[in-house]
Image 1: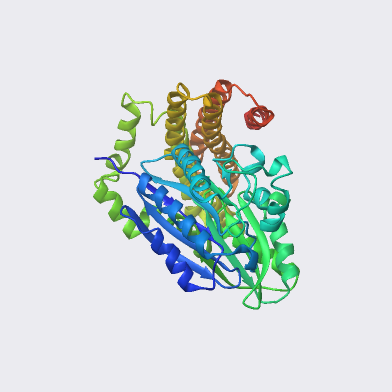
Image 2: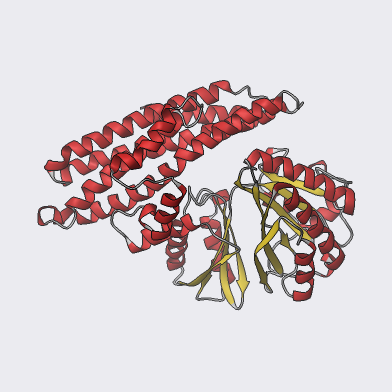
Length: 496
């Protein structure tokens, strides 16, 4: 019997009254749903509840949580540092196992409609579930907060909810429901109460104002210290250690330092593995070196013990199997990961030797960067296969849906982004490998030649997948046209 596992992380506008939060949590406790974590923050006056459960059960749990919050929370009396628009402010669904992002989009639509029907609370859809590009970003929907939406919802067409009447619930406001990838809520405290510094750093780090991709940020005064509050929407593309280093460097410009950081909710193990590798500068780091990971892989049959062939043979046999996935995109990512691995090996074996002492800084930088790129490419092996499966499902669903073309184009965009990321990553791997040739042992020149050849093959394969997916799109909106044009432009630049 197959099972599905979905994560839901509802945010409620109450972080001071434990009894109210207890009541909301209790309302969401139904068979098939498990409470993983709960966080209360009095300064933000907000709580974050992390649930996991089966597809049907977790939808009902989220709906009940919204209903209980509407009974207990009065936004007309609510004050806190965090922006808010609803008693149940945001309800995201995240795919974990046996479900896709598109499945979570369908769940968000059903839950949104049911919230509006049961509780007369208007609902907006965001992230992957958004019905317009402007609503993909939560901050666009929440602009003006509860009071601003209350004043404009009936008169401003841009404020019309996706579900429910164009009027806010008098005390519970409006709710945002969506589907997204795993998000890390990450905050950095500074050794100053000057919140203006935190706001300047947040502006520098967030993508919307020119900072790091997949980072959202704002500055607050929390517990007497300036806090840079951030959401990392894709930690695999922009890892947490890179964000911390960025904040630390920006803080130094104002003569302040980070004193601590906090994670609100849960964090994937991979994110901590990446941070450990970065800050400890472990040579030849690979996630399979972690005892628990190795045990899990061996016991699940994903890793064989007994020689190199035993380790790689299962993947090769999967490629040879008469199934659509894994295919060329996964093979390209695997080739790129091998190229990064070879480059790191050559740099590591040369570093520390007297003949290459003058290049130690360059070699260390190359090792660190290649390790990060290798991990990203390993993740892309499965991601490419998963994105193709989403495309196939979209084609099936489209036959019975009036919204078919949009679903297909959305799935094809996902399927384009993975090989495009692979292409850009392996291009960097190839460049680093080429630069290593004059500063590493000539006895390992053949290893670098192999790395460069693998990177080139990975690049060609990834770009072929990009072209196939973009050519399959039939853009119907200016945003879809822009996506296709941008993808072709990036691919053309890489071909050079």
